[in-house]
Image (cartoon, rainbow, N blue to C red; front, side):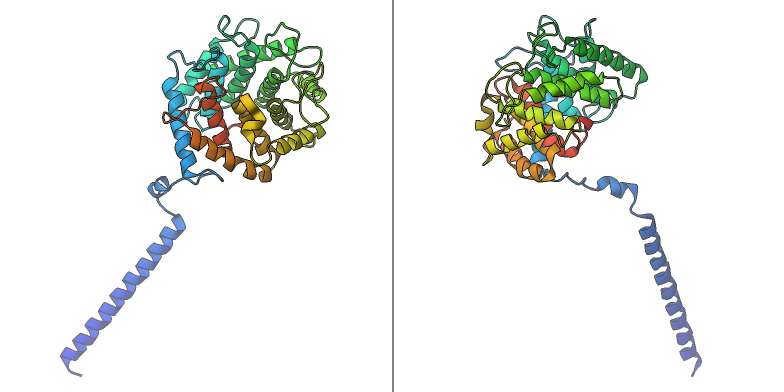
Length: 370
């Protein structure tokens, strides 16, 4: 072999060695990348996974509805009804605040954190010395708003990071619980005003759900108050499985109140309650064929608020048969500005309930979790 051939052989060996080293380094780099995982930038660019049954169209509807609520919030942090009924600022502000929090916007985090915080401040400012949370002179039936306000503040309480604001919320809730306990009728329910001594189902369920949320937040609630309220709901049951307007007398079953009763009984953790089981069977029979509009008549959105909770809390099977129907109906009926008109009460009411319903799969609020 001459010198030229020998040089060519040595050059070829060096090239082969160099390529082998490059390949080895490349393999090592690949293994290193696989070990450390993708960069934070790559994580940030990932599209978050949608909850089960939430479609792209549902996401669009949710964003439009959230934007509508934010646009229509008053400077003082409140919302009014926007319909043919009275304004009910405490109830409407609480429902709208709950709807935003159900989408992951807390008083301290999220795109609409400042809107939630302003709503919290408005509700705190609505508390009266006797514990009633209401704008006196503006609300004819203040116990509705009082119940929703307890629910809203209790959910916000656990998300608040400012200790001073948290202490203010706790003081308001403590007095609100005392007011609710004192105003409970001897039958175990509540009526429209704290001093009425009367009772009916719709107001009663708002108090029970509010009290449950407060207790879940770690604030003391008299056990007897909730126990007597649950007994009131049970005493309001008819033989057909539905719940009537009041426990005091007769009357036909009211589907919207029946749905509310199921949600509240499940909120209490009593999933094997025979009254709840009969109520749910009554509702499923009544809404066979997904005829919710006929079943809930003029209280379609009120029924939706509680029927959605009842179906979600009862079982995955019930939820999977129910939610797609309601989801598509809400997408189809949403106004171009992002709102829903709810039961003639108003667009704040309808939009808040539509949002709460669509956002249940996100599981952001403890009171709506299984």
